[in-house]
Length: 419
Image (cartoon, rainbow, N blue to C red):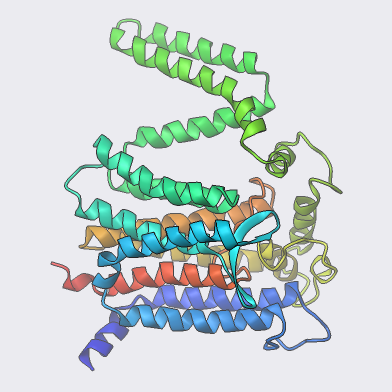
């Protein structure tokens, strides 16, 4: 009885209430997005909104089971979880069902399991387990190499599906590594690479090379009395120039045609609202038409007449924007930001380094999904096809995010018992 009372009082109920609110909001918006007049009941199990209700109930059961388990269970078995998800990622490449060009689902009767979703929490667990149990520092090359290997293996397997959106999610875990001591220069290099990639697609390469050479020369002139800057600055300039000349090759030979088209639409290189830019254009129309207060529940015309593809999954935020307006969208964004800040607060108050690292991993993954998903619906980032946590339709995504979050809640509930 004491253990049950302790569990009840120690669990962070603020996060659980936000989680429940997002699940309910998602359920009602899925009902609006794929509403069928022949099956009006939101509890009709023959529809996607009826199935989402079952997914929510089973997710709550999963979360309850996690809270009843011993917190040490997740740390000690993290290599097993990681290994199982890697096996599933290999299996899906052999027997998986191809949907929308991605062989990412294992058919299990009428249900389809997406292993890439579950790889997120298992990778977080193993990363936290390895860093917390190692005597090496994050500045050590061996530590960095093994952490990158842990991230790259599932990323590579997911890229073979190919599911670029899910694969990119693992890059967000670099923020958890940064919290543990990874050099900030790594983040600067990453940000610089992204900026150069975009600029190379927009402007002439020789112009960019000229700017880089000019900036390097200016810096060397300003610091001409310090010769130790000459070699590093020269190497940085050469590296940037080589990267610029490699962008077009990577763009044409690594990215798929539809991925290039989506980037071109965002950058304004393609203006095709009826073709390549159709999804984004309809998404922006739906959100913008909602105005301040929205058109009302089940009253969205863009939603009702299926103008926006994948509106119950990747583009669920369009329904929020159209039917609940700016006010409703602000509430949803506010709930996510509150949850993320609360998770970071939970991570920082931990006595266990394992829980702290895992907590930052959870925050990184949820933030990546939140930012990219909403960003792609309003035209800030290319459409890469990832779900909005707890709102988008789908059992695999809801269960995996639930497991990801509730493991942290369980570990946090035991924090006072950590010596």
